[in-house]
Length: 227
Length: 272
Image (tube, rainbow over all chains, first blue to last red; front, side, top):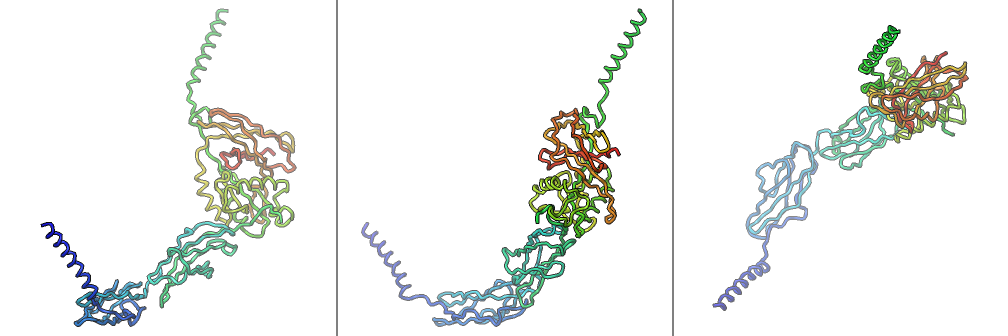
């Protein structure tokens, strides 16, 4: 009786092992995708533009392939179950992705995601965080100016204008914050207008700006200084 | 003899009753140090370090602001102008209202104040209200400093528990002696305090159209005040002073031992 039990266990293990061996001897054959992956008719588009996406896939087995298209925004024009598809870009600009799942009776292959930049027609959002409006300084002081600039397509550069004249440029942000250091001079005595202008990183180079006034007091340095 | 005795006794009893009833008089005079609710108002000491020789308009603008405030609040706003030279070793931009022997003590006081502020070094115009705590530097028009100072001036005009009364005695045409009665009103004890003495001379400036309130002498360091218990007063001898040019008024201010805070100040015109 005990022998019969052990024989049954052994048979079960052998059968289980045979399935793995079958897998090795007879591997699954999901669809194969071309190295180019998803090909797009355009990868920088305006909102609501339509572009064509294609995938070259081969089926190692007999039978048809199934195509399921995906995007993290916008819409596909039906039918969207072929090797090419029409995609309508969303209204809001930004960075989007299109990809496809291709399947046959033995499995599914997922393509890498392709980026599509949808150009935003909106202006960059710009805020001068520091100094506060109407802050008072004196000639000779160094003023730290912090500007937050955001845009769906990113910011290419932030320009700083003092009383209408371009004073500095910054294209390197930390957490979307662009920093300037301004040394105040006698030409700025009085109400001085600080304007930060951000230019979006897109074909339209849309611009957004923010401005504040600071107050600068004139001084005479020293007092009993030795020459 | 009997009548005189009776009369004296009646008078004595009457005086006793009067004296006894005086004890019950309420001490409700607000300036009476023994009144536990006594107080006075803060007079704001405004010390301005300026130079009127430099061609830039900034010091002129500051003085215009300060004199506008002094006109607006003639009794509460005590303006002292420390006229400074730009350089010690040249006559370049030497202020016309400054005598050279004052420069060192003016600089000592300004440096004491500036050391409390790291953001701006010693410059002019440089204005302080009641010591180093409230500093106003620079000007951008003739009313900019007035706009900055006025809100702080209102904040400082609060109840004050120190009373100062200068006692001036003119000895001769060039000499005076100065004392000051100091009282702690209400429940305030006067402790760890000094008295600053500032003599002022008025100068009419034709170009500025201002009657400048120039510091002609600053007593440095200030005079130590002994401890005065609340409800009492002491007279502090501030010394004898000789003048070639007789000043117009004297300002006495109660200050901290490090000279950086001003608690109360008072001014009085000097006898001619």
